[in-house]
Structure formats: structure tokens, C-alpha cells
Length: 428
Image (cartoon, rainbow, N blue to C red):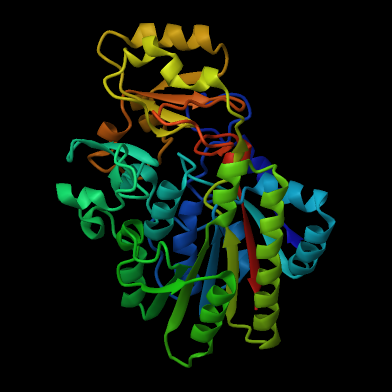
């Protein structure tokens, strides 16, 4: 294994955005070379196309993974943080053996997620090469001023309309034309690269997928084995075009939310995934193609967050009364829309109720410092992040929904556990 973590991780963790204090041990997004946002440009270069979106990975990483390939496969494991990945291998001998074998011929490097470290934001960056400030998908739940609603950006529905998947279309929301930045599919097709996306049939052709995947061949799958078979089938077809194959697996994230990432069931499920991945890689390696690059990464990691009534904002009516709407974004990175004249009151309340557990940063200052990127900005971005950004420390979070808190694991914040993700590469 070529392990680049010891070489690159100190630089990543030492990186700081100017005049921005996110708290002790916070990982600042490294948008200029060591983040998820740099992958699309590198993938395009590996496939012989001009870069797309942000700059590619830094040369000292990009060049170590080779120059040109006919096929690039990106396996996105939702919720696979770098710290958890390393810890779970140490503590599970059977899993360690599987990964020891797979990593023997691999390159392992660290990357940062984006801010917020959440799926809707990170996947939009992977399909646009744009920072969150540029593409405007700034969290799981965001205020859409143009529609007068706080929207769930995974389900494309009002947050209070449970089960109303895609319901925003009744307000005129069109996922295929919502983004103001280009997406990866048409760019690849322009340069004779055929893009594919392999997803579970429950989310294939969902609103979020349609928002990201213009010009992409979406292949619905039922199981992991079905997914790998479909990938191999596409690779086995003779064609002159180069190919980009995006493979998405969500179960680790779902399990980590439900049980907490430290629960044995999460490790067991990841072991099953790892076995199937190992079989897939061996099948590719047996063909001795030497024209395919397989990448595995994640959108974010997971932080255990045991239930705590003191973090539930229904128990803090004084704070809620000082807001124009409920907080938005993520429990681990809330955006606050504070009523005029209540700023000092809110700051004092937070400091008194949760001393040392939440940092409040003016939203305008966070934008200027580049927390959401510094390459440009969607005109709607400032409206979507309110006037204060709250950065939880340690394992703190806020829960503001009316229903009972069901989550034992969360993400969205800037802790190393949430922000650091692995990039693993195999040349096959």
C-alpha cells in the first residue's frame, strides 16, 4: 500500500481559513486541492478531458494516481469517515484481513469534505465541481426564499410535509433546472466520455438525482451484487468512448444515523460491503485491463450523538422566540435567522445554557472567510444561510423538529470525524 495519510494529513489539519475560528481541532475545508470538490476536475483529466469546475487535486496527489485511463469508477460510500475507517479495521480482525488484502495494491490519501459536511451539499459538489457557495445547496434543510419554504434538499419537499417526496414541484420547483452551475454529465459527453450512475432503485431518478445527472445513464440496482454486475457488464462492452462510472452505496450512512457509528451492526454491514467490493476488484484485476482507475471515497463521516434533552430546542422556548424561523441546515451546523435586535440576547442565552459547546459566527463573516468556498457565489447563497452560523463543539448538536429525536449519529459539522474522508485508489 502507498499510504499518503502521514504525508498529507498534517497539512490538511493545519490548514486554516483566514480570520475564522471554528473551534479546537476543527478541520477547515481544503477547497484548493485536498477536498471532494477537486475530484471532478481530476477525474476529467484522467479521462482525457479538460478540467471541470474547481482546480484538480494537488499535483503531489493527482500525479501519484497516474495519468490517463479509459475508465474511471468512483465508489461513493455515504458516511465513511477516514477516522472511523481506520478505527473499525483495527478493532475487527475479519474486516482488517479483507482490507489488508485490498489495500496491498492501493493508494490511500485523506481529503476533506465540504461545509456543511452533508450528503446533499457534498454530492452536488461532486456533480458540479463547484463549492457550496457557488452551487447554493447549502445543507440538508435550507430556506428557499424564492419559494417561501424551508425545503428538504434530499426529498425536495417542505420540511413539515412528511412523505411528500418531490412535493416542491407544486410550487414550481424544477430539479433539472434549479442549479445555476453546469453539471458533469454534459461536460463529459462533449469530450466523448460516457457517464453512468449506479444507484439503488429507490433513489435512481429521484429529484436529487435528476438535479445532478443530466446526460448521465442512470442504472437502477436492487442489491450490491446487482450493482457490481451491472458495472462489470458496462465495462465489458466494447466502445470507443471513455467511461465514468459512479457507484453510490448509502447503507452505512443509514445505519450510522439509526444506531450510531460505534454500534456493532454498522461494522457488520460494512464488512458485508467490503467483501463484495473485494470480489468486484478481484474480478477486474483478473482481466488485467490496466486501463481502469477505481476510486473509493465518501461525502462525510459520522459522529455519535446520544440523545440529550438539553440539546432539543423545544425545551428552550426563549431561544426559539428570538428566531424568525426554526434553525435550518444540519443539527451539527445550524443556520439561525435571528430577529432584529435579538442578536445579543441569543448569544447570551447560548453561552449560558451551553457554555463552550457552540460557537456563533456571523454568516457574512463566514462567507467572506471562504467557509463555503471562495471561487464565486450563487446570488441566493446569502439568503439561505441566515445571519448566524452555529458551530457545535465536541458532540453537541441541536434538534428542533417537532417529532421525537430518532438519531444516534449525525454529521454536517467540522470535527475531524465528520470532515475527513478517505480517498482510496486502485489501478486495475
